[in-house]
Length: 286
Image (cartoon, rainbow, N blue to C red; front, top):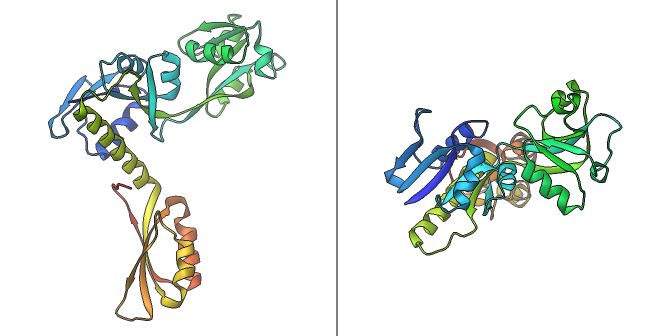
Protein backbone atom coordinates (compact mmCIF):
# COMPACT_ATOMS: atom_id res chain seq x y z
CA UNK A 1 0.00 0.00 0.00
CA UNK A 2 1.22 3.47 -0.91
CA UNK A 3 1.29 5.85 2.07
CA UNK A 4 1.01 9.54 1.13
CA UNK A 5 1.32 12.72 3.21
CA UNK A 6 -0.98 15.61 2.24
CA UNK A 7 -1.14 19.12 3.78
CA UNK A 8 -4.03 19.32 6.25
CA UNK A 9 -4.33 23.13 6.19
CA UNK A 10 -2.78 26.27 4.79
CA UNK A 11 -2.45 27.51 1.23
CA UNK A 12 -1.25 24.12 -0.08
CA UNK A 13 -4.05 22.00 1.37
CA UNK A 14 -6.96 22.64 -1.01
CA UNK A 15 -4.91 22.72 -4.25
CA UNK A 16 -3.11 19.49 -3.25
CA UNK A 17 -6.35 17.63 -2.56
CA UNK A 18 -7.92 19.02 -5.73
CA UNK A 19 -4.97 17.84 -7.81
CA UNK A 20 -5.04 14.37 -6.26
CA UNK A 21 -8.78 14.15 -6.86
CA UNK A 22 -8.28 15.15 -10.51
CA UNK A 23 -5.62 12.42 -10.72
CA UNK A 24 -8.19 9.82 -9.71
CA UNK A 25 -7.50 9.48 -5.99
CA UNK A 26 -10.09 9.62 -3.26
CA UNK A 27 -9.80 12.65 -0.96
CA UNK A 28 -11.41 13.64 2.31
CA UNK A 29 -14.73 15.47 2.42
CA UNK A 30 -14.36 16.74 6.00
CA UNK A 31 -11.43 18.59 7.54
CA UNK A 32 -11.66 16.40 10.65
CA UNK A 33 -10.44 13.34 8.74
CA UNK A 34 -6.76 12.77 9.46
CA UNK A 35 -6.36 9.44 7.66
CA UNK A 36 -8.17 8.35 4.51
CA UNK A 37 -8.02 4.93 2.87
CA UNK A 38 -8.43 4.74 -0.90
CA UNK A 39 -8.93 1.00 -1.54
CA UNK A 40 -9.41 1.36 -5.28
CA UNK A 41 -5.86 2.73 -5.64
CA UNK A 42 -4.45 0.78 -2.69
CA UNK A 43 -3.35 4.09 -1.18
CA UNK A 44 -3.61 5.63 2.27
CA UNK A 45 -3.53 9.40 2.75
CA UNK A 46 -2.32 11.09 5.95
CA UNK A 47 -3.29 14.73 6.43
CA UNK A 48 -0.46 16.45 8.29
CA UNK A 49 0.94 19.91 9.01
CA UNK A 50 2.82 21.01 5.86
CA UNK A 51 5.94 21.76 7.92
CA UNK A 52 6.02 18.18 9.28
CA UNK A 53 5.55 16.30 6.02
CA UNK A 54 9.21 16.24 4.98
CA UNK A 55 10.15 14.79 8.37
CA UNK A 56 7.65 11.94 8.09
CA UNK A 57 8.67 11.15 4.51
CA UNK A 58 12.38 11.51 5.24
CA UNK A 59 12.13 9.10 8.18
CA UNK A 60 10.59 6.47 5.93
CA UNK A 61 7.29 6.35 7.81
CA UNK A 62 5.47 7.56 4.68
CA UNK A 63 6.38 6.86 1.06
CA UNK A 64 5.75 10.24 -0.59
CA UNK A 65 4.30 13.59 0.36
CA UNK A 66 3.21 16.96 -0.98
CA UNK A 67 4.74 20.02 0.64
CA UNK A 68 6.48 23.28 -0.28
CA UNK A 69 10.02 23.30 -1.62
CA UNK A 70 10.85 25.90 1.03
CA UNK A 71 9.52 23.64 3.81
CA UNK A 72 11.45 20.66 2.43
CA UNK A 73 14.75 22.55 2.43
CA UNK A 74 14.06 24.17 5.79
CA UNK A 75 13.34 20.81 7.45
CA UNK A 76 16.77 19.36 6.61
CA UNK A 77 14.95 16.02 6.40
CA UNK A 78 16.45 13.16 4.44
CA UNK A 79 14.06 13.62 1.55
CA UNK A 80 14.27 14.99 -1.97
CA UNK A 81 12.02 16.51 -4.60
CA UNK A 82 10.52 14.12 -7.16
CA UNK A 83 8.61 16.66 -9.22
CA UNK A 84 7.24 20.20 -9.04
CA UNK A 85 3.45 20.47 -9.00
CA UNK A 86 2.88 23.95 -10.38
CA UNK A 87 0.91 25.54 -7.55
CA UNK A 88 1.73 27.35 -4.32
CA UNK A 89 4.45 29.41 -5.99
CA UNK A 90 6.31 31.99 -3.93
CA UNK A 91 9.62 33.85 -3.82
CA UNK A 92 11.78 33.90 -0.69
CA UNK A 93 13.90 37.05 -0.22
CA UNK A 94 15.85 39.20 2.22
CA UNK A 95 14.46 42.59 3.28
CA UNK A 96 15.61 45.37 5.61
CA UNK A 97 15.30 49.09 6.28
CA UNK A 98 16.67 51.15 3.37
CA UNK A 99 20.45 51.52 3.58
CA UNK A 100 20.96 48.46 5.80
CA UNK A 101 22.22 46.09 3.11
CA UNK A 102 22.44 45.91 -0.69
CA UNK A 103 23.61 42.32 -1.20
CA UNK A 104 23.92 39.02 0.64
CA UNK A 105 27.50 39.75 1.68
CA UNK A 106 26.29 42.84 3.56
CA UNK A 107 24.36 40.57 5.95
CA UNK A 108 27.61 39.45 7.63
CA UNK A 109 27.48 40.19 11.34
CA UNK A 110 23.79 41.14 11.29
CA UNK A 111 20.74 39.49 12.88
CA UNK A 112 18.34 37.78 10.47
CA UNK A 113 14.80 36.95 11.58
CA UNK A 114 12.90 34.27 9.68
CA UNK A 115 10.40 31.45 10.02
CA UNK A 116 12.74 29.30 7.91
CA UNK A 117 15.90 29.20 10.00
CA UNK A 118 17.25 25.99 8.47
CA UNK A 119 16.84 27.26 4.93
CA UNK A 120 18.39 30.67 5.63
CA UNK A 121 21.26 29.25 7.68
CA UNK A 122 22.16 26.86 4.87
CA UNK A 123 21.89 29.61 2.24
CA UNK A 124 24.23 31.93 4.15
CA UNK A 125 26.67 29.16 5.04
CA UNK A 126 26.98 28.10 1.40
CA UNK A 127 28.01 31.67 0.59
CA UNK A 128 30.39 32.04 3.50
CA UNK A 129 28.30 34.72 5.22
CA UNK A 130 28.36 34.61 9.04
CA UNK A 131 25.20 36.04 10.56
CA UNK A 132 22.93 35.36 13.53
CA UNK A 133 19.76 33.61 12.35
CA UNK A 134 16.77 34.10 14.66
CA UNK A 135 13.78 31.80 14.23
CA UNK A 136 10.34 33.39 14.65
CA UNK A 137 6.90 31.98 13.88
CA UNK A 138 5.05 34.36 11.59
CA UNK A 139 4.91 38.17 11.26
CA UNK A 140 8.68 38.54 11.02
CA UNK A 141 8.26 42.02 9.48
CA UNK A 142 7.82 43.60 12.93
CA UNK A 143 11.07 42.13 14.26
CA UNK A 144 13.15 44.96 12.78
CA UNK A 145 10.97 47.72 14.27
CA UNK A 146 11.07 45.99 17.67
CA UNK A 147 14.86 45.73 17.56
CA UNK A 148 14.99 41.93 17.50
CA UNK A 149 16.62 41.75 14.05
CA UNK A 150 18.37 43.85 11.42
CA UNK A 151 17.22 41.83 8.41
CA UNK A 152 14.33 39.49 7.69
CA UNK A 153 14.05 36.59 5.25
CA UNK A 154 10.51 35.78 4.22
CA UNK A 155 8.11 34.93 1.41
CA UNK A 156 7.49 37.97 -0.79
CA UNK A 157 4.40 38.17 -3.01
CA UNK A 158 3.36 41.74 -3.79
CA UNK A 159 5.74 43.34 -1.27
CA UNK A 160 2.94 45.47 0.22
CA UNK A 161 3.38 44.03 3.72
CA UNK A 162 7.09 44.85 3.64
CA UNK A 163 6.47 48.39 2.47
CA UNK A 164 3.99 48.94 5.29
CA UNK A 165 6.74 47.91 7.71
CA UNK A 166 9.19 50.32 6.03
CA UNK A 167 11.29 47.49 4.59
CA UNK A 168 12.60 46.86 1.10
CA UNK A 169 13.94 43.70 -0.54
CA UNK A 170 17.57 43.46 -1.56
CA UNK A 171 19.93 40.98 -3.18
CA UNK A 172 19.05 37.96 -5.28
CA UNK A 173 16.06 35.77 -4.38
CA UNK A 174 16.94 33.08 -1.85
CA UNK A 175 14.55 30.58 -3.38
CA UNK A 176 11.70 30.21 -5.85
CA UNK A 177 9.34 27.81 -4.13
CA UNK A 178 6.24 25.85 -5.11
CA UNK A 179 4.43 22.69 -4.08
CA UNK A 180 6.47 19.56 -4.77
CA UNK A 181 6.08 15.80 -4.52
CA UNK A 182 8.83 14.44 -2.27
CA UNK A 183 10.39 11.03 -1.55
CA UNK A 184 12.67 9.86 1.23
CA UNK A 185 16.39 9.60 0.45
CA UNK A 186 16.49 6.12 1.96
CA UNK A 187 13.58 4.78 -0.10
CA UNK A 188 14.57 1.62 -1.90
CA UNK A 189 13.00 -0.61 -4.48
CA UNK A 190 12.59 -3.43 -1.93
CA UNK A 191 8.82 -3.24 -2.39
CA UNK A 192 8.17 -3.27 -6.16
CA UNK A 193 4.46 -2.55 -5.64
CA UNK A 194 5.23 0.73 -3.85
CA UNK A 195 7.69 1.79 -6.56
CA UNK A 196 5.10 1.10 -9.25
CA UNK A 197 2.51 3.08 -7.27
CA UNK A 198 4.89 6.04 -6.88
CA UNK A 199 5.63 6.08 -10.61
CA UNK A 200 1.93 5.85 -11.36
CA UNK A 201 1.19 8.79 -9.08
CA UNK A 202 3.85 10.85 -10.83
CA UNK A 203 2.36 10.06 -14.25
CA UNK A 204 -1.13 10.92 -13.03
CA UNK A 205 -0.07 14.21 -11.46
CA UNK A 206 1.89 15.11 -14.58
CA UNK A 207 -1.21 14.34 -16.62
CA UNK A 208 -3.25 16.74 -14.50
CA UNK A 209 -0.68 19.50 -15.00
CA UNK A 210 -0.52 18.94 -18.76
CA UNK A 211 -4.32 18.91 -18.97
CA UNK A 212 -4.39 22.30 -17.27
CA UNK A 213 -1.66 23.66 -19.55
CA UNK A 214 -2.90 22.55 -22.98
CA UNK A 215 -6.10 22.42 -25.01
CA UNK A 216 -6.98 20.32 -28.06
CA UNK A 217 -7.48 22.29 -31.26
CA UNK A 218 -9.34 20.70 -34.18
CA UNK A 219 -9.71 22.39 -37.55
CA UNK A 220 -10.14 21.83 -41.28
CA UNK A 221 -7.60 23.24 -43.69
CA UNK A 222 -6.97 23.00 -47.45
CA UNK A 223 -4.50 20.23 -48.30
CA UNK A 224 -2.24 22.77 -49.96
CA UNK A 225 -1.84 24.66 -46.67
CA UNK A 226 -1.38 21.73 -44.30
CA UNK A 227 2.36 22.21 -43.85
CA UNK A 228 1.93 25.87 -42.95
CA UNK A 229 -0.90 24.98 -40.57
CA UNK A 230 1.23 22.36 -38.83
CA UNK A 231 3.91 24.97 -38.24
CA UNK A 232 1.30 26.91 -36.25
CA UNK A 233 0.17 23.77 -34.35
CA UNK A 234 3.14 21.40 -34.09
CA UNK A 235 1.57 19.56 -31.13
CA UNK A 236 3.62 17.43 -28.75
CA UNK A 237 4.96 14.73 -31.05
CA UNK A 238 3.22 15.72 -34.27
CA UNK A 239 -0.32 16.80 -35.25
CA UNK A 240 -2.89 14.22 -36.35
CA UNK A 241 -3.88 14.62 -40.02
CA UNK A 242 -7.07 12.93 -41.26
CA UNK A 243 -8.57 12.96 -44.77
CA UNK A 244 -12.02 14.47 -45.35
CA UNK A 245 -14.71 13.49 -47.86
CA UNK A 246 -13.66 16.52 -49.86
CA UNK A 247 -10.12 15.47 -50.79
CA UNK A 248 -9.10 19.10 -51.17
CA UNK A 249 -9.31 19.45 -47.37
CA UNK A 250 -7.86 17.63 -44.34
CA UNK A 251 -8.74 17.65 -40.63
CA UNK A 252 -5.98 18.48 -38.15
CA UNK A 253 -5.86 17.85 -34.39
CA UNK A 254 -3.08 19.07 -32.10
CA UNK A 255 -2.31 20.12 -28.54
CA UNK A 256 -1.82 23.86 -28.13
CA UNK A 257 -0.62 25.71 -25.00
CA UNK A 258 -3.69 27.19 -23.33
CA UNK A 259 -2.35 30.80 -23.21
CA UNK A 260 -1.76 30.69 -27.00
CA UNK A 261 -5.27 29.47 -27.88
CA UNK A 262 -6.84 32.61 -29.29
CA UNK A 263 -3.70 33.77 -31.08
CA UNK A 264 -3.34 30.38 -32.78
CA UNK A 265 -7.04 30.36 -33.76
CA UNK A 266 -6.67 33.81 -35.33
CA UNK A 267 -3.57 32.78 -37.27
CA UNK A 268 -5.21 29.56 -38.48
CA UNK A 269 -8.26 31.44 -39.69
CA UNK A 270 -6.13 34.00 -41.51
CA UNK A 271 -4.24 31.12 -43.14
CA UNK A 272 -7.48 29.63 -44.46
CA UNK A 273 -8.47 27.05 -41.83
CA UNK A 274 -12.13 26.71 -40.96
CA UNK A 275 -14.24 24.82 -38.40
CA UNK A 276 -11.72 25.61 -35.67
CA UNK A 277 -12.76 24.01 -32.38
CA UNK A 278 -11.11 24.05 -28.95
CA UNK A 279 -11.63 21.32 -26.34
CA UNK A 280 -10.50 21.23 -22.71
CA UNK A 281 -8.45 18.25 -21.52
CA UNK A 282 -9.51 16.59 -18.26
CA UNK A 283 -6.68 14.05 -18.07
CA UNK A 284 -3.88 12.74 -20.22
CA UNK A 285 -0.71 10.64 -20.34
CA UNK A 286 2.20 11.80 -22.48
